[in-house]
Amino acid sequence: MATSSDLVTLRGGLVVPLAALELLWELERRGCAVRREGDGMLFVGPRELVTAADAVRIRAYRDDVLALVDYCEQEDDR
Image (cartoon, rainbow, N blue to C red; front, side, top):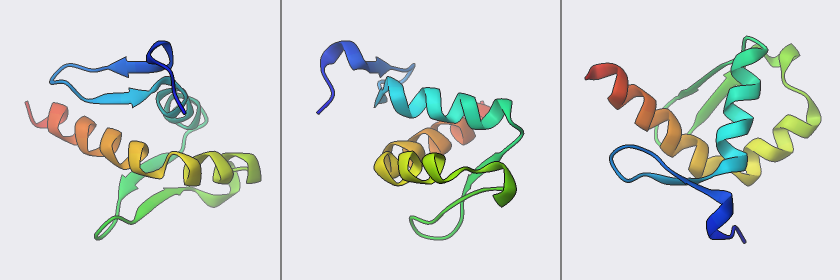
């Protein structure tokens, strides 16, 4: 369970674990695309850039990653 020091509040009030945000930053640095596909589905790829450890973390933070993807899309639309 995340403590308040492990959480980040983004503009607009979205609160996510720092670990989920760091995971997305790390994937982005490696050149991975992360996007929502369908209802609650997540695409992260290309597959060869995603490690087994990444997959475990992505599953652990799936809902937070989806919320961050939605948040980024909303911010891009502003």
